[in-house]
Image 1 (cartoon, rainbow, N blue to C red):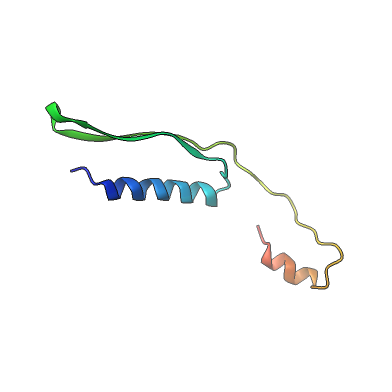
Image 2: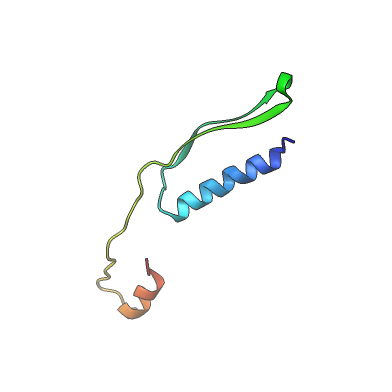
Length: 77
């Protein structure tokens, strides 16, 4: 059975995981639902381009009035 809600939730989950893993330029190239009436089938047709993964190096702070140890804990990567 085709469920639009499941389809939408899957797309949201995929986008969420991509963002958490550092794929900030990810996008759906193609995203559609299809129905083959003669075969009584429904299908998802998705092309997803994750793009490149962003990685961040060490974070440094200069001239801050807040202790470096506190700031490092806030920005732990």
